[in-house]
Image (cartoon, rainbow, N blue to C red; front, top):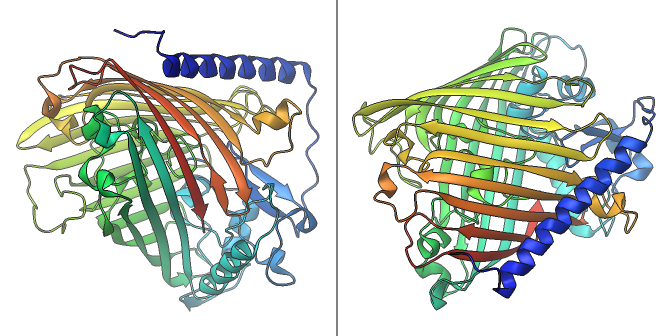
Length: 505
């Protein structure tokens, strides 16, 4: 039973209501505002993704200090997974119309726009609009990134120092601390410049450390006995683990990409522009990826991506799904544990005048422990107005009780809204375009491995604010309330507060 007389829960509910009122006020202001004027593109423009994933052009003088004169001409804009890359980005990736084959080339294929967001990392670490516009660390990080990109090594490193506190849990789990990181890289091996046919090594390392004895003894999920993990960026695996190490190849005029080896399917399937990465977006695992889809990480597999049209794509992923995190992928190979996933997506640049969106259908069949069952997921994100700072997203999924053991939820809904630069919209403070506030709701039912369950329906609410401090560092305070965790008869609700300091290099 939930008691609204508990002061912390009352505070969380009051803050959530305040966010709803804020979103309504901003939406009303956007309806009253006229259309914005799109500036004429500049050849020397720097392009950065805003909080909704849209490319925003900045003149060199408006951008964080770059390490070398003329760096704007070699800058390749970042792009968020789940969005389409701009034509400008594709042109800079390809580096012109040269002929021949380059080994360890600084140029990348410049893939079809949605595939580019999945498979090609830029060479730019800094983001404009920070509280402190320039700092020595960001300049050094940017200089290193340019140097390695000259030899075909493109990467993205996200890391966080995180404090987590949970109420109504054992005292040993009240205050926890962690360091965690996620390192993605692509090393180009060869590139046929005229055709875009290219081959490269794709990799991902992850891990971290528990700070303090209490953090080593327990996890958030163990303390709550819940389906969802309120701190998904904390892996629970310390040191270094390999999530992906595979050969990747582009062909068919940049519209097809194949991947074979050890694969993290969450890098390609079930992406979302607003809720997909716990280092700088929602923290709860249900907002990062669906817990219904049998997505595998660190397993052998095959992945085939195809984008026949700018607004349509399809991805097929196949592979074993039973390798425990951090284990060698060849130790537990078995035909009795396989996942077969299809994601078909519609990614319009302007959906009905609302602006860019993405709509994904995700049918799957999986075998777990020799039991074969099916399921389906739906994933969408949509900007709520062509010039609006508001966006909505959602994941909905249901599947067989046994094959959903991988994520832990037989059925799940994770949906919410996001608002870009909220304080700026209220004219309270100048904010960068990467700042965001988000409010999300989760409902989950447990898979077979969490049964018998004390509660058949688990609920959660998350309120997140991302505030950029420097061109490469963010504070992301986060408040969650988890109601009726599935395996905890003694816990009606728990208030979870987190304060991660995130750097992205």
